[in-house]
Length: 479
Ligand SMILES: Nc1nc2c(ncn2[C@@H]2O[C@H](COP(=O)(O)OP(=O)(O)OP(=O)(O)O)[C@@H](O)[C@H]2O)c(=O)[nH]1
Ligand SMILES: [Mg+2]
Image (tube, rainbow, N blue to C red; front, side, top):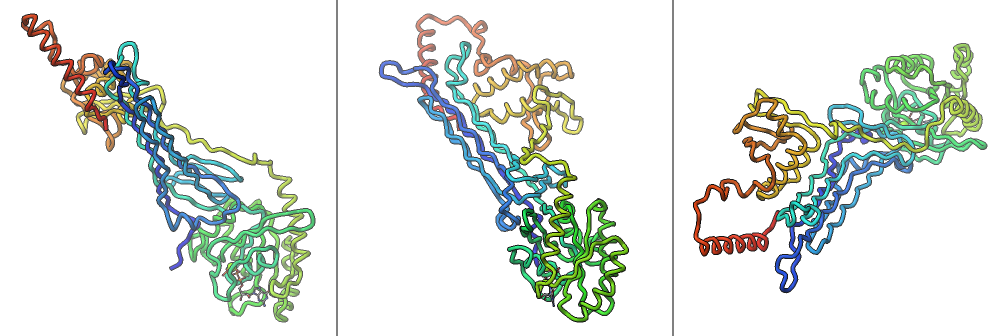
């Protein structure tokens, strides 16, 4: 079975952000200098760009997994990690991007039109960037965020001035091969053409594109044959050419009936009523074909069609046809508002960047916090590092998460989930956890509650504590 390559599923993954680095500057006689851990680099984006030189999605059919490079981690001595490289994927003009539920994300028309299919993860801040007056030597850094990974569907809707429509074997591919430099496959069996061929025709001073669309059969609009796949390509063409076979050997067919059937399919597909149409009677090099063409021409002209008798094989009548098409294309272009040459498609953000919500989730028995910031902060947190967790608590607190939890009725010990159902980090809520970074790691060590110690003991304890801290710094490895 032949596979269609004008519709592909693509799995894109943007690069992950590099982790920030926690490092302490070291100099002789100055064992604990300032924090000097650099920031992680940004992950590369996955970007789709229209390149009109490309006509199929074949490449993506063969290798549907595409990943941009990751950002590099930061390093000591304030060295930032390198940004990941964007992955630029070229697609044909007229590529429609859908999510896996079939929602259109972008419609890429025009050379250079760009769509960011996957956003690279932010790099994590290093401890140098995290230091402040209050937090002079942070012993932690932020993690890089994972790059956006998603499944998308690319669908090609050919963009051309003219579409050739007709039964299989009517000679559409033959016609495009003699009107333009395109070299499609031509054969005497139906459905030779499986993906549209594009050709460029020059007639006088007019240059236009022509698409050889795969053959249509009755029921195509209901998906018979490879119907819908084909009709999709007709949608974006401004002029339709009925290619009729005047020399078919099938006894139950004749050109006028063929035309009626194709018109009925176009009507049922819908949306094509306004396209100007002309009729091409092909294969008039065959005597019977010539006779038939002459016989039906008046009928077709009565219906208002401009009719051309041609032979793709014997190259008859081609010049008149191509100049007539140039004229109709010219009119169609003049009637259409000129689109901007390049469009950049920007995806709307799903979540309000500033806000967050707190809702009690009955099923999971947790208070669920949703919001772009809290969720990002969670992703950036190294949960093996108390200080990092404290910093997270601090950030959440300042955003007002604790207040809102309290208002929503949360009590100490209740579950709090930050993020979506599949993707949440769950805490046992302890209001003190939210009280600030300073509290963390010191919990249960309130000095006011300790029994008084002799001076020598206090000194020994202090030294031990300092040595511990030093060792922690030395051994610190956030990842
Ligand atoms: N005698 C004659 N044969 C032709 C002419 N044009 C096409 N043919 C023949 O008709 C057959 C089908 O031609 P194609 O160009 O492949 O037809 P198509 O419309 O592209 O067919 P599908 O791709 O299957 O839809 C081939 O054997 C061609 O050689 C013509 O003008 N005269
Ligand atoms: Mg063909």
